[in-house]
Length: 238
Image (cartoon, rainbow, N blue to C red; front, side, top):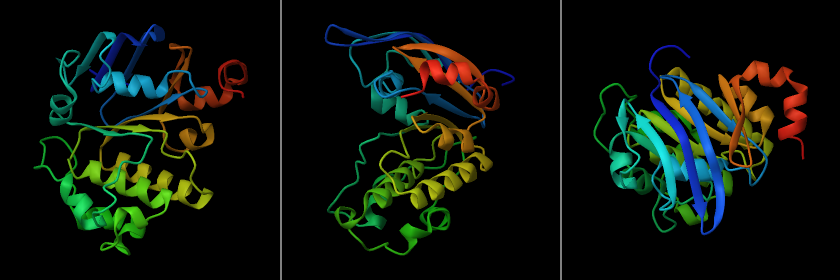
């Protein structure tokens, strides 16, 4: 990564009650870069995402986006600045159609960010194009995951936080999701990807940060992680 990062996280700490989940996370996402935050279940990946978005009350540390400290901002203001968040629990509006779900996410174009329209998203996600009038509650888990991602993109974010996108999906849908993420990167979108599936992360990410017990244990090129068997065995093996 060269130049000033789009997102910089320094000394990020977070708690659930008395449980200290993040113990000083440091990471950075460059412009147009895909960073994979990888680790075992419970390592702190989703908590990092929520802390960056301001969704946790008990947190400390610094989160800087486009040079601005957003650590103390509420989630809706962080989103308005250009960070899109796709949680792991697919939160589609079940009574709304695909088209209506996309309209809910619509925001004006954002300088320096890719501009998305429904037609452009239908080209990216052909499955959604075939079910524009279908209600969200009548879609499969993989289709809902794609819809949640597409709805977030309608906000024209500069940075996408994508939490466990491959979890629970059929291999065919996982492949389609990987292709979509590569297309998003080609559009210039920056992505922070939380993922347990190392093969999936390796197919889309430029760099990787390995998290274990709320601490970053490795940070470097994705290819370097794929070659470091000792790191993978210590922090990623089940």
